[in-house]
Length: 170
Image 1 (cartoon, rainbow, N blue to C red):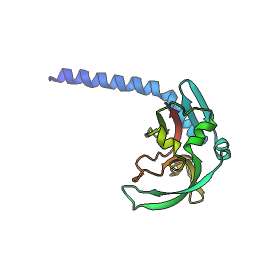
Image 2: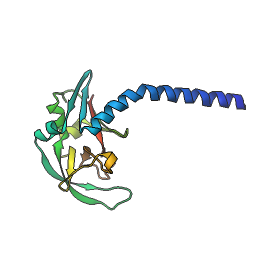
Image 3: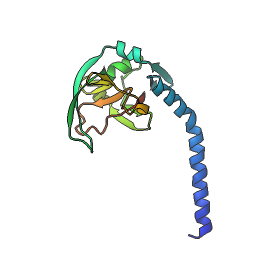
C-alpha cells in the first residue's frame, strides 16, 4: 500500500471516530448527569424511567456478603448493602416477562450482560450502594459507586460493574 492510500485511510478513520464522538456526546452528558446525581436510568424498548437514590433505598435494602476477587488483590469477603436487581427493575415498572437479557452499563462505558435467569435469582445480582457500612463513593472521589452491580455467583468478579448509570431490559 502506498503512502497516499495510508494517509487517506487514516484520515477517513479520524473522520469516522469524530462523527461517532459527536453523536455520543449527548448520551455521555445524560449518563454523566445521572452519575453525579446518584440516578439510574432504566430502559425497556421506548420506555425510560429514572430512579434516584431515595427511590432505590425505599425498595427495601438488604445486606449480603460477596467475595471481591481482582487481578491485583487476594479474594476478600465484604458486606454490601443494596437491592436485588430484579426488584430495581420491577420498581421502575419494567417487565422481565418474555425477556432474555439485562444489560448494565457504567458511566465509564463498562457493560455487563446478564441472562434473565441470573437476574431472577434474588440471591445473585444486586445493585449495591454501600460496602462494609460505608456508602460507595462516586468515580470522581476514587470509589466504585454510587452504585455497583454485584454478581455474587461470578467467581472472579469479572461481571461486576462499577459506576452503574443504566439498566436495559431486552
